[in-house]
Image (cartoon, rainbow, N blue to C red; front, side, top):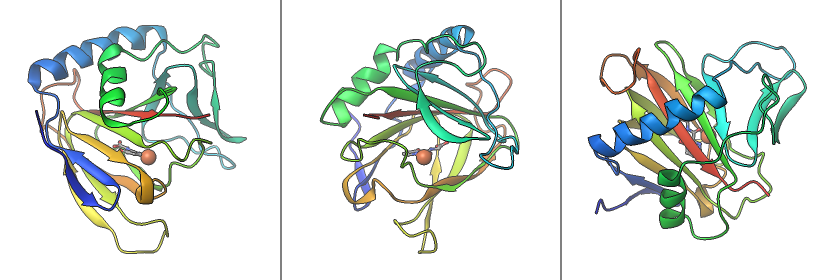
Length: 203
Ligand code: MD6
Ligand code: FE
């Protein structure tokens, strides 16, 4: 049993909550589901600039971004097929950490070398009373967390494979992002890089 640390009010962290064997199992689940819902590269609303990360989703609703904006939708934007179900390892994690209604979305981010994610809030969900829970697999990442104001002070945290982060309560709308990936720090992901799996309640 890994104990949780509260990094800031409402921001919880579990170091290596998933051990190597559990990481490998989860990775196999993700790679199998990825055959049904392949990674694609979203673009920014407005300017259509491609993301540096590739994404897919599992669950009833997937988070997508295109020229018209950010939204949740029940189908993959490229294949037009429903997203595959969230794997049991992740619904178990959600049920253990987030109390409240079941998760509806698992957004999967794939970071190859050089990919990053700008400072953002997760605010496209109507269920802002439910937390967001995320699992990291593969290479280490430098995660930056601030407060609910974009310009406030931030803290940096290294996220390693198997780590879990939860944002809830006073931190549900905290700004956060990935400054960079440290390539070659893990052998888990074939071809190198990092996967992040983020669970949310949407409705
Ligand atoms: C990432 N994570 O770790 C991006 N959002 O690649 C997130 O954007 C995130 O880790 C909300 C809650 C936890 C997270
Ligand atoms: Fe986020």
